Length: 282
Image (cartoon, rainbow, N blue to C red):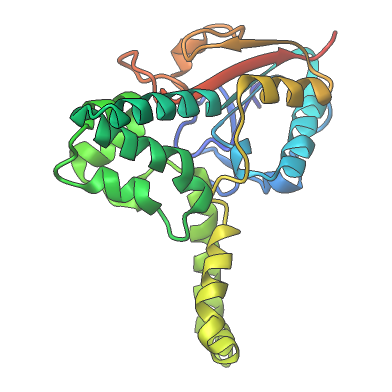
């Protein structure tokens, strides 16, 4: 029986009590769906729709269409819970570390360097992981406590275990991997040498093609939100009673038991997040 709770762009953070959906299946029971083309369920199917660190990977127009789709599949009185990187918190922390670095406080220089990366890297990077991954994989991170406070469990796994980027919980990275696998399958077919042909035709411009292909694969951020703009987006699509919550607070019953925004030990999975909920009018 399908759950009335819907988790979109779930990556590896899914729960058996939910209907879990991602661009590609990321585990047992996870449904594959291209969320850029809509949500493949009937109107008024779910009581709750949840997604975390997903809509920032959509353009502004795509995000509007997607939020509209979320409303379509929710029942009257249903709840949407949206989690995104908190642009305001990132900018305020950046400005604080900038001022401290300007005053010559030496321990602030590393914090300032990290905040520049946190603010810009996922918007401008041209390769997987970007500067964030390089920073996390450094064996001598000068401000490890600050970085863990900002990034939580996602960074902790890499910093503590020196994992490869392929192990990062990133649903959008799965899209790029599937596209790469499809390309490899095509190349292996007799007479089909697409990438070689493209490289031959483009010559020196091939590197630009590779960058464009990466930037359209879903990993980079296309937009960012603060509570004002996210509230406006939800209200614009017809949601009511928009409220800001926390990782541990929700109108969803028994929220913390699902460990979607928190870890089993109670720690927050992505502390740099903004959490908002809203309702469909009854």
